[in-house]
Image (cartoon, rainbow, N blue to C red):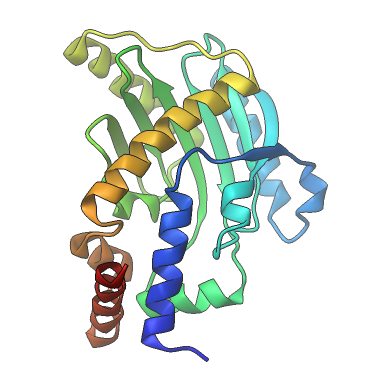
Length: 235
């Protein structure tokens, strides 16, 4: 039975699991995800390849799959010709329970494209059209920018390239080169460690983030957040 407390507990448990440490990934076959728009995966990969990338692999995030919010998705990964930027695109389609929570909070789901570059000083530059992810604050070491969901892969990468050049100039650092899936995943683990430390430090979800995620904050979403904070104090 749905209650505000049960919703808050699900969100807290899920958030802690997601940010407990490095995520586990597994190679998958796209055909196993027939509930997703596989044409989106193919079309977007061609657009990314046109920017000088190569396809690397299709992977599933097992940590998210085994969490309370199984996104029921896979990630198609790529690498730029020089190995300095990794690409990822995916479609999130969770089961009905989480769609109810997203509906209650007004959160919108969409298909997404990400570009990520890691630097020798431990910092990252990321550029994405994953509008939901853009509602969360980023740690200082991760310079994240989010563009509208309809932004094309070409426009995203053009913006990403510009931001990488600025980052090199401002921080006097150089991008790390990646050449294989294991190296992509190692880079992801380093980014996940930064996010995990940041989430634990700010209390998992800040009220300002909650209100942004809720899209249209109201008495119900405020009550769920109050339950969320009460559960943290109990723990």
